[in-house]
Picture 1 (spheres, rainbow, N blue to C red):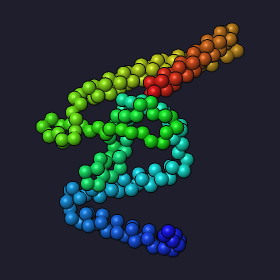
Picture 2 (picture 1 turned 180 degrees about the vertical axis):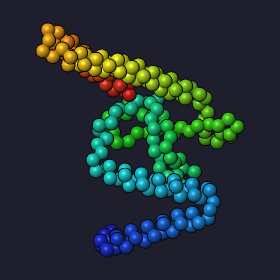
Picture 3 (picture 1 turned 120 degrees about the horizontal axis):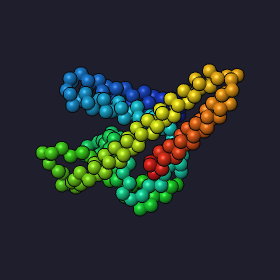
Picture 4 (picture 1 turned 90 degrees about the vertical axis):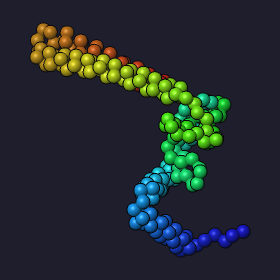
Length: 206
């Protein structure tokens, strides 16, 4: 069995790896080639994201994730690709049938956009526009729902502000109690509406 490295050996290894990686990026940058510059940007992005993932692992609890079903479409970061590996952010279709809530693994098929005129790879399958249409419809529906909710909430806020103004003017007068009750009532209705809106949003994400 290999002997564990000492702290100093690990530090030196880390420095060597960073120097080598930095030299690679510098060589790409100095080339002036646009493809190389793009690769530098992608590599830098992935290292930054990967460091965040490692830090997040300390507190991440996969049991708090939702239980995915076969056919669900999710967004996945496949990381930096080597060779013909898949990489970057892509939508993906879940393959697992009733993926357990406490499962740390989910199996997916990555999706990518197809530009008319491009050639399909032998291993690719053209799915048409159905998924896009489905996602677009869901996006439009949620956007319209949020716009309507915002409009209703703005109306409630305007009504509350108006009642507050009227209430302030009637302080000490005979109509004070009447406006106070009206203000309390509309405030309760607004709070109930806000709670229902929050529940609707949660349900729409499931």
